[in-house]
Image 1 (cartoon, rainbow, N blue to C red):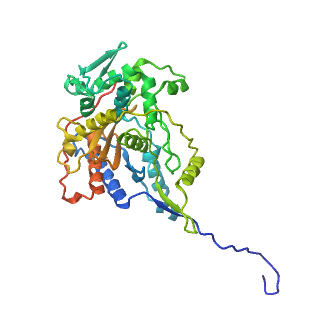
Image 2: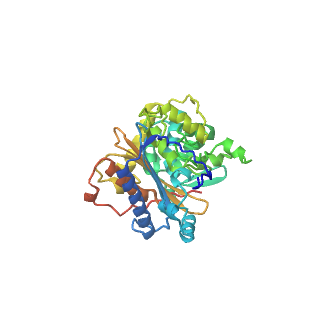
Length: 418
């Protein structure tokens, strides 16, 4: 209003409404250690400090409480500085972020072939379908010949020999491709993909974050959707986590959590609680329904699968021997570790001939509390990424990481895929 009383404008004021308080499940200390360890590990791979040198592009990880499904840490590298967008980011810095895909959350948006960390699914499906027994031994001759094609076990590529006779526990320990080629061929893709779906592979986890990928699950249905015919050789590739199998690290963390829970489903969450302004807490089911509606996550029906605990246990024992028994593919990393764990290495070749390095682990072995998944893009060998898992588990269980002498050597190990 002017001095002569003329009204020049009108403002309507309204008191602000207090919002909700959201508490996340992220453990700040564990998150900081996980991020730093992942960055350090990528640099070590680039510099050849762990053995063979690889031009690692980036990486991601997920840490989950296997009892509750709470996500304790979630990281993607390269990352970015959010404050730059608030204060005004330069074009040069923005272009840098675009070039190295720093704005891309690899942990939930990236879909990668899992390689050998998929073999536990193949093992469970083979045991449940009775394609194999817990004690049966299959002879790895090094080269798997079938359907007028040949597939090589990684040990044949490196040493021109096979693993010999192995049972399922030993095949997981030594990551024998030949064994799982045969298991996959015996049971067929329909059985394999059915059990993979039970472990949540090929579908979104429903985590309360946007842009999560569902990945792709190798199956006849997936091939038909692309107007492609499914061949028997495709099953052999799928059985070792190659072919059309492409999953996010957070999906793999959920799969591992389901595995150590005896095959029982578990939902992941990054929200611990939501409290309204009147101090009442929002029901978990209400949060879940709201998130699923917003993100378009369908309700999943019970698939009727109930897995024999003894079959799960033999697979987990194989994972224990990966890390803690001589001959295991990650023994060099965990042989002197103070926590008994189960683990699995994975090295998956991409269409661009990169070799992504995976490590899956749970701890402690006898009463699992956490599951950890680490993936390094073009990280070379699965046991290279195991160093990050070691740091994370040490931090979670309150071990003095500064007093632990880090093992920067690694047994040469790779897996070759046709």
